[in-house]
Amino acid sequence: MQYLIKQYPLESGALEIQYIEEYFGEFPRRKTAREIIDRLAVRLSLILMAEAPLPDDPAGALVPVSYKIVHEIRGDEHDGKLRDLVERLHGHVSFDGRRVLYSWIGGTRRDWRGQGHFRALTEESETWAIANGFDEIVVKTKNRYYDMRTVLSQLRFNVAKFERNPLDNDESKVYLTKLLQADLVRGHRSVRTVVHAD
Ligand SMILES: CC(C)(COP(=O)(O)OP(=O)(O)OC[C@H]1O[C@@H](n2cnc3c(N)ncnc32)[C@H](O)[C@@H]1OP(=O)(O)O)[C@@H](O)C(=O)NCCC(=O)NCCS
Image (cartoon, rainbow, N blue to C red):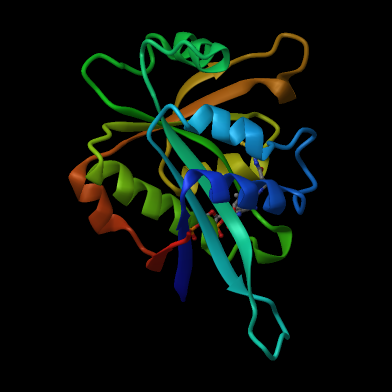
């Protein structure tokens, strides 16, 4: 299968993500275009979306089915949430003289899951990250996100830290990382076409 990936600039990408997140049932609080723009405007980031044909559509119309946003995080973050993230990563991820990428949000629409779209987006983001000099990717999830934890292990992320929630272990946080070595790209499996959206 050949995956079709669109790389978006900030403004239109944020609007597309706001739109696609309407189709995800599992998130109690979805990201708005404003939140995405505010966070990404001041840092290097990548917005990717996979498109695929609607099943049984004779016209073969393409729809957005999966997305991923990654962005840089630095050791001296001032943004409250990112400052907190960097502090929690202390002793587990080094920021000294290294470029660290945070895999912020992503997902695949239910009817298109298990078809490799998220792997394709992840592999594309890794290729971009290596080309842009990043050393490591960090991602955060929760114990109860079983699908995401399985997928991240399939994508060879290693657990860097487990942060137990004393009241509810389902809510415990799991931090995973992946080192970005140049030969990583050779192990990529997806065949991708990447186009730049306006
Ligand atoms: C997790 C999620 C993004 C995966 O997207 P996807 O497009 O279905 O993933 P892919 O098809 O690219 O699968 C990637 C790998 O994970 C495996 N995988 C995917 N879903 C799986 C599942 N539910 N159980 C076990 N393995 C699974 C695939 O087999 C594949 O492995 P392989 O390439 O080595 O064969 C999607 O299920 C999702 O959006 N879930 C809800 C969002 C969520 O849980 N968010 C958590 C917030 S951190």
